[in-house]
Image (cartoon, rainbow, N blue to C red; front, side, top):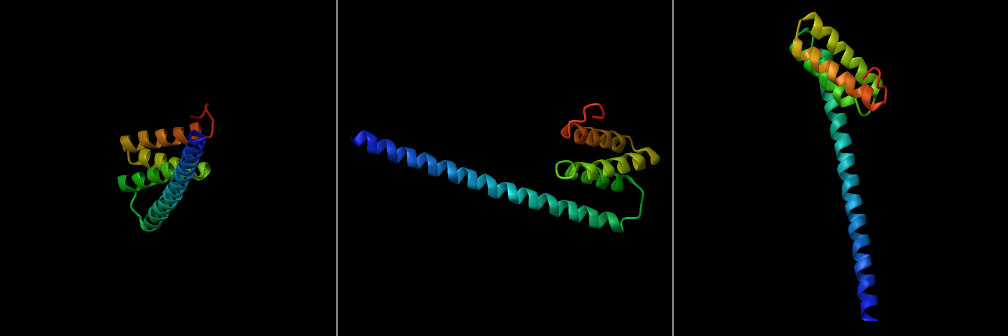
Length: 116
């Protein structure tokens, strides 16, 4: 009989560990989502006030494309295309490549493999 009681105690312990682990993952995921939205808001605020058409603006547009990629693919593609257009205009090779990569990843995530 003692083995049965010991087994039940171990089973309850495992369930508690699983529930605790899931709770921790949930909290970390919410923190990550909040952090990502904060980054998006910060970059968008800077971008609104940024008037130069240079590599910094290309990088901000690429960052927004990447950050929006998981939460809003349409907006991500919009920022990626803006980044690509500006990068080509100022002949910024890294920015062109980065924008193509980011746009491709977004299309891949939404399973549009022909455009990816």
